[in-house]
Image 1 (cartoon, rainbow, N blue to C red):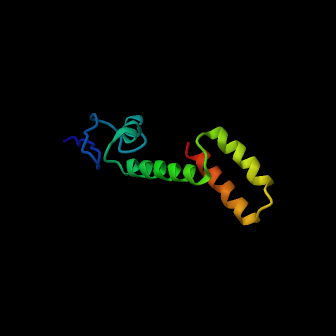
Image 2: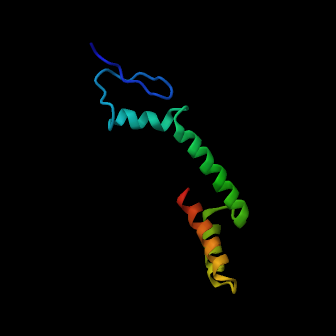
Image 3: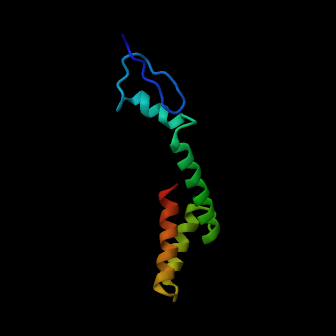
Amino acid sequence: MSKTLTCVYCGMAYPEGTPPHGAKILTDHIRVCEKHPMRLAEEKILKLRSALFGLVGAVSDSDLDSMEIVFRSLPAPESDKIAAINAITVLRDTA
């Protein structure tokens, strides 16, 4: 008796003999499965990225480069500089 491997989120059945982990077919499906929890995480990342862009006043990645140079040279409290530079770093990391 053969067991059919299925996605626990959407129920998609994989071809017979698909290993339960580590197969390319599984990772490919995770990238497109609409019910996988990663979709919610990706949605939240996009919302956070948009909010951070609004807070720092940037509209592009090149703006972030310019803003980091400015923040590093401002005569402002070090904690404010660090907060702004951290926001810029997060925006770059989530691109």
